[in-house]
Image (cartoon, rainbow, N blue to C red; front, side, top):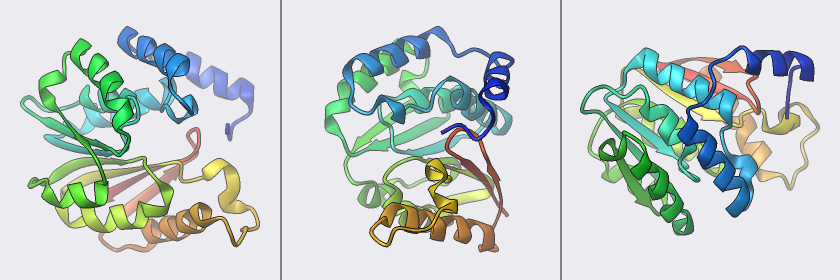
Length: 213
């Protein structure tokens, strides 16, 4: 969903940095071969992720929800020298496509992939994170936050995607809609948790930036 008028949205995209060629290729192949290609971060949001990463120069990044690897490559652009991005996805069928583009990129040696349940994998990663991107199953957003908040360095950034959920967060709640219910609780948590300061940006489907105090 676009929360800005289409002409304004197009102007914003057209006056932002273009995505690297490798990401254009990955986007094309994702749309050709993978179910639900709309799950891609996309060129504009990808440049936002890249910029945030470059501004913070993180040593350790955690990404929850790799999909085909687009956002991981965007975030890797800002990694500190000898930094690492740990990326987790439960869909083993996507691992080959992820690897194809990770191998093509200049960041292959800095990317550590995990396939499986993020709730089980995150506690096994024995590092403190400078940047975390949460973009997986919405029903577990609160669980992911609770797992990573004490693994963050002071000043670390937590990015949460899809927090506007196609505008459903401001519509009457369907009692059967668990994802929207959890996102409403999650957005409230990010606003009220005293350990972080948060701003919600109406970028594409909503992107929250939370800074750890």
